[in-house]
Amino acid sequence: MSDDAHELDLYFKEKHSIRMNKELAAYKKKMNIKYDPYIYELKNGQKSLYVYAFNEKQAVFIASQNLFYAEKVRTCDKSELMNYNGKDMTFKSITQNRKAPQILGGF
Image 1 (cartoon, helix red, strand yellow):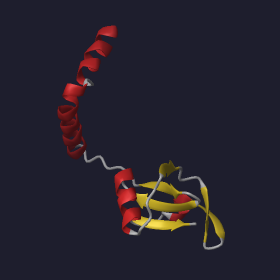
Image 2 (tube, rainbow, N blue to C red):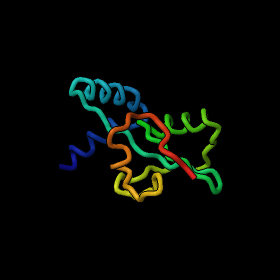
Image 3 (cartoon, rainbow, N blue to C red):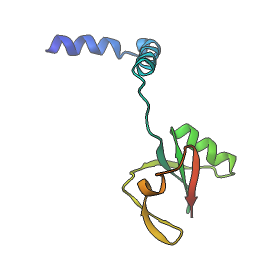
Image 4 (tube, one colour):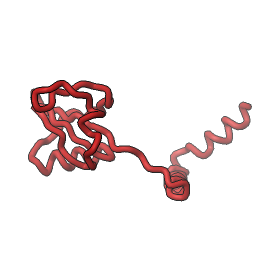
């Protein structure tokens, strides 16, 4: 059992990271693995912006296109509540029929 862990550690070394990322990307493409988009909360002082995007880099880019420069970024759980048009709703119900990437709102 320890031999297997030792062999795996060889693949996770820094010098193998580029090749391992290529192998993982090829495997995901072969197996048709797709990930759902995430909800990101971007904070700038007292202001917050919620963005529905596939990764953090994309969320920050969308925010910066709208002149919102984030100091902190965190992912939100889809079961969290958000006040949307005067109603308390979960992120899951808000994003149900939406396509990513897009801005969900802010305050």
